[in-house]
Length: 126
Image (cartoon, rainbow, N blue to C red; front, side, top):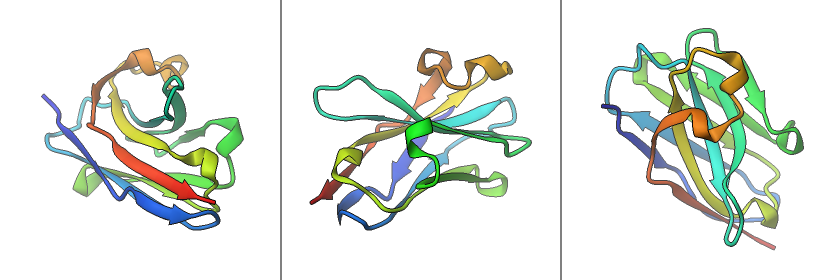
């Protein structure tokens, strides 16, 4: 079983940056991709970004391209989300998750992800 632990959240002013980390506690050899999702108060959880574990191919929500960057460190079993030019509407709980479907069409769909972290709060003040 894989346990995921997110860190790096916090309070930041608009225009600032944060880097989130997601550390996996177990081997991720059968993980196809890792994804970041977020859920704002009163909203549904939404896709943020994903990265294929082996190739490093990245995927982003259209609205976040250019501000957010996902990366991974295979040796550390860790995925990162660099968030720049943060806006108050980026305020949410951010979750990382694993996808083991080995199907590119599942990358954007949260229901295709199985293991989830506990989430880390990101608050952007105006």
